[in-house]
Image 1 (tube, helix red, strand yellow):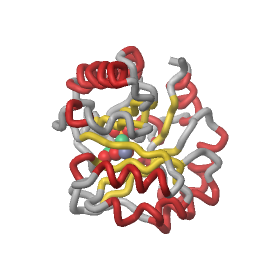
Image 2: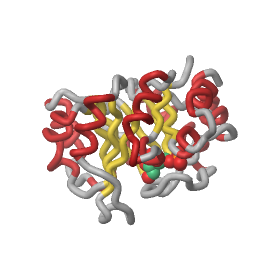
Image 3: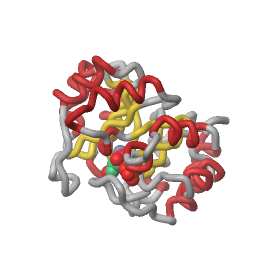
Image 4: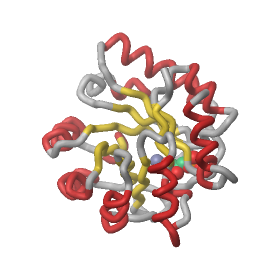
Length: 216
Ligand code: DX5
Ligand code: ZN
């Protein structure tokens, strides 16, 4: 099975986003990953709805939106209206995760739950059958270009096991430090979707880099 590739716009050229999105449209990327940060849940601020809406008008690939914010439940309708296909919320940011997942579905989007590197897979036991995707952070969220955390490989195997034993259909997405060396090991360990920011957008030939990830 070929992995789903979701390049992260965080490492794109913000002065000329249109060119980078047109490159994504032409590429073998399956989705486009958008990182929303609020400076509270993570120690960085990225972009919000005006950018998501603008990107949605030009991008032909489904938008995979990753909210690194407190109270993501307050923005579900706005996210759907902005054109997101997938809304990922952090487990650590949701007091009533089950309700939030239901509301994301009611708004017509796929629902993903995201775990920080220090949050164990076992916390998903009672929600795994309700989500469409689990996003495992393989770096501490907030910045592109960080080093991959090795513990993710074992964690991915534990998540694969939980999905199998529960009968869940959730896909597994990995985000952070995905590049030539880590990507094949992640596929081998059972990842369905790879997010890749700096490795794609900072490469000399992003189209070829995406092709390389797609044909691992
Ligand atoms: C980090 C973001 C990532 C980021 C990944 O908090 O969630 O999506 O863009 O960047 P790389 O692939 O450079 O680690
Ligand atoms: Zn992300």
